[in-house]
Length: 439
Image (spheres, rainbow, N blue to C red):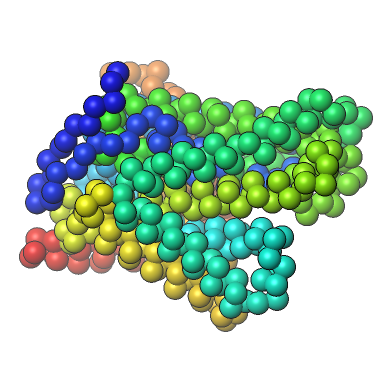
């Protein structure tokens, strides 16, 4: 199909061009999922031996099921907002708003954490940052606001940056996979089950360790209102993107385990850098560059999504319409500025040293706030397909079980904070609706 821009009218707003295509949605899905976590996971999983691949396969399969369900939901709408739209269409204003509220909070809460991870890899090239909390905070803030300004300039620019960063971050991972095929040795692989624990206990443990690496699979659904032929493009991008990530994770983990002896891998703080030593002196530095690009790409996708959710809610008049105000490049610049400001304040609070424990809880709550909208989306699909397409309803049921497993695996303390987040969102909903109708 030819890439022809179409224009849709949004009541009360300037026309928006549909400028995003398959590769942007694909790169949002892949780029947000592949962040900094994969660069440490082989070492985290090494004590569980080859059985850790069962955890990868379970979380990969569960994520692909969720992607299929999201794709089916996306095929019915052209509206921006992803999980918010699915909840709003199925259950009404308040449930839809609470999904948007929690999901939006998860984005700007995660923003400083990803920026901090970026600075951690940056110290490889600028060692002086290691001893300067102010320098670290300044570098993280500079990254957040640079990427925010790119998104404000235009959705096409943010999408282009996301595509480039996603392909660049895959290069070092593919190099490690190739090196594992050429130089790896099966003798380096760990034992099948070094822990000696029952299979299902190891499966549950490794699944909980790996499922967070799939957070963000829904990112490709968020900008549907600015995507060409969204009812076909978005489902394909989300499903293919999730399959891509699953295959990369499995292959990269296997490659690292074949390149690094098990006893070394268990104690490694940079398993991919250790695996890359076979590429020569430049290998570890290449992995550090890859990690920088990976975290920056994940943050770029995160920031892009932080503007889409408030805009979608404002379009439905459940929030002040200023959140849907667009820049000349078609970006919801007020939403982006507010989100980046909140993330920046959290980052500064983290570096102050006074609120570290609170920040940790907020970060964990961010993960839960991503899982809950996926669970609600699954329920929306079950409701829609229960009578007309029982196969899809059954598939959604499997996705719901997986999402519930992930939610309960996050722990009661985090769930409690999630409930508090929802309760805070209720008065915000009524205030926002009142303000939007007064405007």
